[in-house]
Length: 194
Image 1 (cartoon, one colour):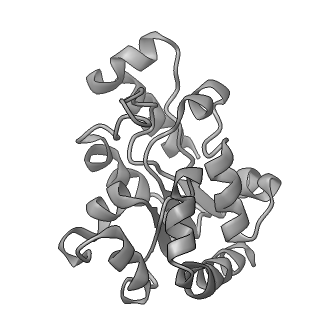
Image 2 (cartoon, helix red, strand yellow; image 1 turned 45 degrees about the vertical axis):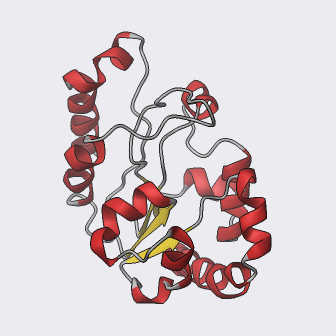
């Protein structure tokens, strides 16, 4: 665990994050040498930043439901890591939040993942995570990428964002619930078993 504390301190000292460190805002991520899966989302929201608890909102409630686990397990287990594309709340945009800052994941993700040797699957939540991790192997849009999720397994599992704003998408794409979610639940269940 000492290595992750060192990395956290480096992140806080990084010039790119000075404005947050000056305000006493800590980077929001979770890494463990025992992690078997890692969830890569967009960036913490305002509530997550205020409570210093990732996925602490209705999107997180839906994500946990999709994963088939309780809030308690989600936060307490060392088998699940959390590496958003940016570890800080990027601020409000005209609609929703601003995107994660460019260059953040590039600078820190591989460094952290290198210290997590047991990771079997990285769950890619939303287009920012998929663009970064899947690169040219992505399909023409998020729907097609998620629909072809089996092509990326076992290393990656692309998901749509669990935001309430995506209710319409979920209704239009019933295959997500019938085809993707059982695989997600199985991956999570296997990661939590000894």
